[in-house]
Length: 639
Image (tube, rainbow, N blue to C red; front, side):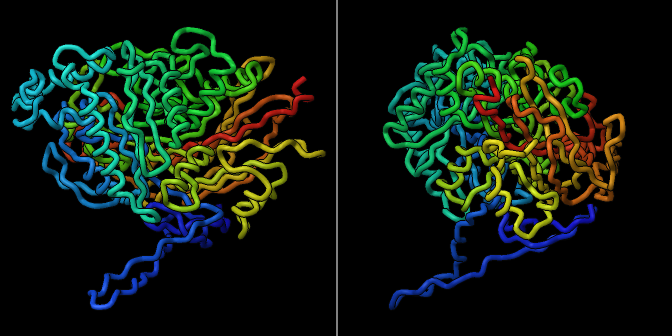
């Protein structure tokens, strides 16, 4: 691009100080380390080691990267596939410490430490299976314990299948009746909260008290992760055994707020919900009404766009003009060979449908921001493509197992499982309250794994060189709204909104290919969508036919290597909507694409010296998706 832009210095995974850096095709970054200060020692006490001062809150906000969806041995399905990774291991790995993978004994460590981790173990049978190996436990004689603790892999696989079947049925029976003792669940939940509090270190590393509600009637994924703002959680989590209806979960959340606990839920994997996740009808089959819309908007301000079970942004059949729509597809419902219905299962369609619902009901039920996650059940966060160790315990903990072409229980190759996504939040400081508040106001974004830095603002009068200005962020906040916000009323004389985007590559990943702004709107009652290529690397331009020349590829598939000889390290742009209609509701979000790089399956194939899996692409273009910005016309214009 050849411009000087304001970018952030990396401290861990978060962004701290601001410096000027020239956009180029190579990686050059400055780093900074907090100054250590010595705490005063009491009389006759030994001197304490020097400690870094807690950073002051940044009113212009820093970006913090982390995991909002993962599992340890406390989740029954993880334990059933041989995972013995403890809660402590999950937090330590996120902090950047080396841990031992429980199934193989392999030493693993993150390339870049995270800033926060939420451990969302399943509420159903929470922690119960960890007691099955204890001969003194009253559960030791349970029939399922014999299968799970058997050295025979077939027995363990059978146990895992029975666990999934029991959760799917939502009605415990047989040996599972021993596992729903409220006293046991509450005790295990208390341990879950205590462990989260043990590793929470305000200003340095944040843990979020959380759990997963695992509603999956007839294998249709309706899962939600539940997050609490403070240092205390409820007496017990809410499980699918209490109810599989999302509206009942919302009642639980509303009751917790009445008791003083701020809480939200985040749905995930609409792509395998069989069209239920963003449907115009509720779980009972009734048309959604104003009350439903209000409750969903209140309780679910965010949604998860990608994880190991595929991407939920859009689908080629829903976005036929999107050349990048076919990304990390995961077609079958969980544990079945049934293809999930596409309609009402993807986020882009839901964003435009929400505009239609808002016009009718007064509230947009699908006005959500974006996060991403792992859903890894092996006790670590696997967002680094080159550092992938599988997602489901003994079933895929080695390259050979992961690349096995034989169909799994869902009728697919194991290679179809993707590596983890990552969530980014723009917050004043790295604390529970600040990160939670950023999530509530939707100043978040998700990536397919890399730690891409992304800013997105919307206003009415941004200068063309705003992203190159020394006061870019302050001016953008002062004169507009960040991702997750609503455009202010259109000022007199302004024809169209302007949007400011700034993207910076992950130092450990590929350069950037392009920045796109994706618009959804309603025209004569019909949803519409369009993709604008607003910033391109390598001095490329959009052709007269609206097409963009491919960025190219430097990937050596056989060696699983690539070079950053193409693409840019950063891209910035101020863009004005050329097709704006002030009478039409609209929603805008950003998608940033990297240059092609090897997929995890290609890295594994290179390790084994075999051909990459034919079930999935050998190369991918990693990406980031911002939370949207919405435009609502004034009442007079709508009429």
